[in-house]
Image (cartoon, one colour):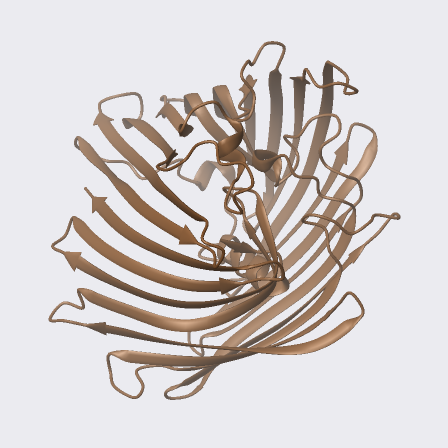
Length: 452
């Protein structure tokens, strides 16, 4: 699940922005850690889910996800890396079940079993100026994550200049044919100083869609300019500006601070989205996988946290989102003010446990209201092989990016237990009671995880 609110979005963004190291020049950035010998690793997660509502309707599904990575030595300037990842959902009961409150995108297809291949590529670092060659299904991270089947090449023009070329066919999980679709692009990155990097990319995507009232073949050119720097090892800043064809599209500015000594962290972010992101192609929308539309908006958010005195740690934040250019509220598109504060007692009341309480203030739809949440976690066993959690949380808007489902005024009470069996296997059991503005739900999960 993901939250369309300040704290949830900020948490995802801040993880990407952590200044583990300063932005280095292209010549000094390793393409990948080299593996001297054959290596293979991966995971397989299976989740059986049972859901019900008070009216008696139920739903049973089996979800799965996998990832595998191998390294074969002796190719180019290092090794050959092979990567694959994907997921599936298997409807285990009545199908299709029209009117079931749990029906989602998966039930719009003809069969019970629906699979997604997210990545399947081979990558090598040739000797010389060409740093990386990659072929297969991959994700290009340029303001949005754009998935395509094709080729990617990255080369050094000078010690401080990097060039990338890429092209292929965009991946549309919801389309049956890629005929007429195309992706092509190029990028240039320059590091004028040790802790400063400037890049520009031009990405053209063409999409053929057989939808009444929609042009059959359309294309867009996305141009993204990004500047990132780290004037201090504790600080990282990034700003972007993009255009869709000849129209201004999005501007972002973000700064992240983390002091290892005091463990104080602060993350602030501004975003202005200037146009809806699914016309004429959907690749440039974070909701592309669920055919969602993101209307023009402006958002500011700030998050901070620090330990105060043992065992107390605090975190707080604020987010404000406004729809602009006459945009109307709707699915995935809302205006709100959201502030929160969290107090966590670490290793309290016993060394194996932690507890937290949370308060949120909301302003949306002309209403002001407060909500509370709390949680407790315990890790026990000789090697902490057991983990248990209980708690409750509230979100005004909660989005599942896998199914495309959005729930409003959503309160969740949950309990989870996980048992690690050796180094490679773990089992989990979870239950949650969920209540939103339309209904209430009981959800039970049985999870098996394999790591290798």
